[in-house]
Structures are given as structure tokens and as C-alpha cells.
Image (tube, rainbow, N blue to C red; front, top):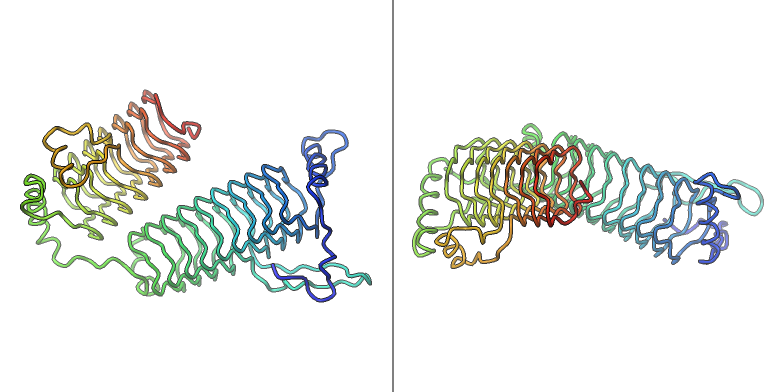
Length: 454
């Protein structure tokens, strides 16, 4: 937020000390609980810079134009709070709940919002006025000014449904954040990091995304008309087929299709088989990075330790395929058939398995390999023993009945509506995973980390 206009002196902001805030928070807590002597926190035009408000509950508080410079608001509750034109520069809002907060005209430049919740928050432009010492109305210098989120760090933050139209969000970090159905019309997101960000149904009409990093972002159902994607990195991003053909999208950095892949695929697979069986002495490792293999019949193929980053495999048949230690980060496995596929030790970070069939698939540690294949992978430099690495992966509505997920890393994974009946999840990591609507009947859950999400 800019400094006050002339006539609104810095002294116009009432400075509060930590002890004063404790008393205000105590009374506000009583107000929220309906207890005697409660009083709503009415802190418009107060200076709370540098205070420690860790886990403070300011739900429904009036925080209009409050100064929060470098204030600690970690895990604070600010649901429905009025933060109109608030100055939150360099504030720490990690894990804070700002659901439906009014942040119109607020400045969050350089703020930290990792894991914060801003569902349905209002971050549009604002105009604000106040009375000066003579009793005259004075319009502050935020008229026609957009909310500013430049240089914020908001990894894994949930801004679903947030209104950010016309906002200034330069060089922000929204890695793995949720911006589903967010209003981002004409928003300036130039140079921002949106790696693995979910933008399903978002309105990006006229948005400025030049040089933004959108690797692995989900843009299905998003409105992209008039958006500027000049030199934006869209490799591995998931778009609707019609959106992928828009002139706007053609200005972005896209994966270059591998020429004559259909004719060469059989040869690539044969060379890879030789490479694996000879422990690298013959053949060649399959390089399928950025390849479009949608709908292909790859039943029972051997792609152990293959390079498959950003590969498109939606609707493909990979049943009984061997993908041991393969790198399929940012891959598109939507609706793919992976029944009894061998994914032990595979890396599928930020991949999409929406609606995929993984019944009986094996995603356990590579120590479960047969001796021969285990030695081959070890000699090829894939010796780390771990389950499949699927952090930040989208497995919404996937079928995982009877799948072996022992030791798999599913941190921050989206497992909403997934069918995990009779799955083996012993020692799996589910920290931050979303399991809303998932079926877990008969699943083995001993040693699971992060099952609070269930």
C-alpha cells in the first residue's frame, strides 16, 4: 500500500503495542463466543507493524487500512475480516485463514502466504476515504489502485474463487497453489511462478502471463481469450484441446512434438529393452520427454528408468507396463489404463492421474524388485530405495483398488473421490493430502504419516 496522501500524516495511524493487542484479542474472542464483556476488534487505521499475532483470531474484525508491515500472522484466523486497503507488506501469513476476507486494495508485496487459505477472498481494486483534522472527507491515494501481491510467496495456498481481477501480481510464487475458479481477468502475472498450480475454471481473460512459469499447471476449463502468454513456459501444462489451439497459447513455450514418433516408437521401445537388459551396454534409454502418446496401446511395455517428463498419456493403455524408476514428472495420465502396472520407485511428481485406473498397480519401494532387475537399475544409477514419488500429484477420482502404495510419497496429493479400497498404504506419506470423498474400506493404514487429512 502506498504511503498516505498529503494531509493524512503518519501520525493518523494509531500505534498499538503488544500488550494492548493482547487485551483487544481477548475481548474480540469473547465477542466471537458471545460471552459477557466481549467487543469486536475495530482497528481501522491502526499500526500493528512488527507485532506477533501468531494464531490470533481476528475473524470478522475491522482492519481497514491497518499497517501490518512485517507482522507475524502465521496461522492467524482472518475469516471474513475487513482488510480493505490494508498494508501487509513483508507480513508472514503462512497457514493463515483468510476465507472470504475483504482485501480490496490491499498491498501484500513480499508477504509470505505458504499454505494460506484465501477461498473466495476479494482482492480487487479499491477506493478509500477518511476525515481529516478539519472534518473534511479526504480520498486516500489508493483510488483506482489494484490489490498488489507482487513478489509474494504463496506455495500451496488455496485461492479458489478469489477475486483478483485487474490485480498486480508480478513475480509471485504460486507453486502448487489452488486458483480454481479464481477471477483473474486482466491480472498482471508477468514473471510469476505457477508450477503445478491448479487453475481449473479460472478466468484469465486478458491476463498478462508473459514469462510466467506454468510447467505442470492445470488449465482445464479456464478462460484464456486475450491472455498474453508470450514466452510463458507451458510445457507439461494440461489444457483443453480447443484451448491448446488458441493463438494466445501459441505464443508460449510449448513442448516440441517429436517428429515421426509413431514410426519410431517400436524402435525406441526395442532399443530401451536392450539398454535395460544389457545394463546400458547396448541400445539406448528411451527419451519420451514431451512426447504425445495419448491413446496409445502400450500394454506390457518395458519402460523401466525411462525419461518421460511431461509426456502425454491420457487414455493410453499401460496395463501391466513396467515403469520402474521411470521419471514421469508433470505427465498427463488422465483416464489412462494402468491396471497392474509396475511403478515401483517411479517419480510422478505433479502428474495428473484424474480418472486413471490403477487397480492392482505396484507403487512400492524398489527393494521389492526381483534381484536381476534390481541390480540393473542399481547399475544404471537408480539405487535409491523408496516407494513411488507422487507428491503434489492429482489422483482425483482415480481407481486404486488393491494398489500397493507402501512407502509411497503422496504429500499434498489430491485424492478426492479416489477409490482406495483394499489398498496397501503402510508407511505411505500423506502429509497435506486431500482425501475428501475417498474410499478407504479395507485399506491398510499402519504407519501412515499425515492421516489427519482423511
